[in-house]
Image (cartoon, rainbow, N blue to C red; front, side):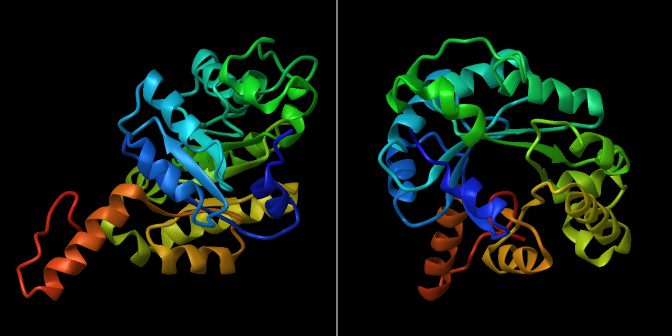
Length: 261
């Protein structure tokens, strides 16, 4: 059995911190998996991962201490099932805006009678023959709350059995509110929407999550009460480290897409 230590921390009321992988680079994944972070989130929605890339990356995470999780590209029964069959111990689904959307996620993630996941798996057999006996208990399932529609229906979405919590996408949430995502921190509408979702999670006993912009932001969100918190990404660490070096060398740091503000 593979214990989902990140989920255990969250259920105990403690924050679990993760790093996001957006680059298909198994050696980078392997290095980050053993750095001490609670979980690694493979981003197949915006990252550079195809089906083979996802499997290679999950293999690279096998011997690390970080719990392997996957953000699927969309709310799709087959995509969710394949990520689970490949060995994901956490599933994050984007753009969940209704109770029906959330129910579809829960059904795809769990074996009958709780859900409708098909019995069969490939790479997940590395967890042992007892995999179907414990995976529904150890699996962490989160839906993304990233539109004002989802915020308004958060109580219905998060009340669905089989949904452990959520992961707020602050940039997309800002866009849905008509706010420039780079200035969302200065708009009270954004803060109010986030606070509402956090309150709903507390009322329903679900895990509140947040996609933080930086380590300090992750610390602040954890202090606010969020327990599933991503604190950075492979490409972010690479670019920011490079920019820091450029400045230290007395060179002119580039700005624009991919290079900070």
